[in-house]
Length: 134
Image 1: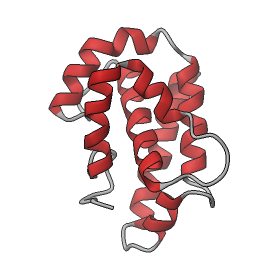
Image 2: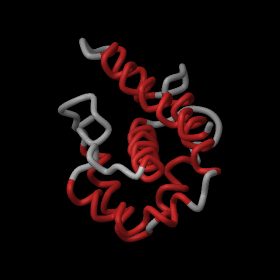
Image 3: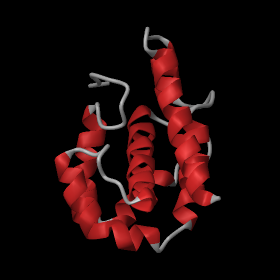
């Protein structure tokens, strides 16, 4: 995995996803969160974390945690994303799957010295989404 940090946008799959989002809009966010059942491959997990981060920023109306290109896309798509609150439930469910045993991303992070930091980032994002939902 081309990763240089525990942040949602600190990996190649995340940055690639921004281009998909640019082309496909909020549909890209919805697809990234639809993990289905069974094993979650690393690239799908990375995309779901990014999509969840984007949603948290959209609903909080704060893009400061996003890279510049994503900030511009959020300005374009934020209202459309906020009109789909069901995506918040999908994001929470996706993050729980990514943190679980059937996640390649979780398994890869477990092998690193940053495993606890990565888990803390995931838990923090889940808390943000839960606060927005309530």
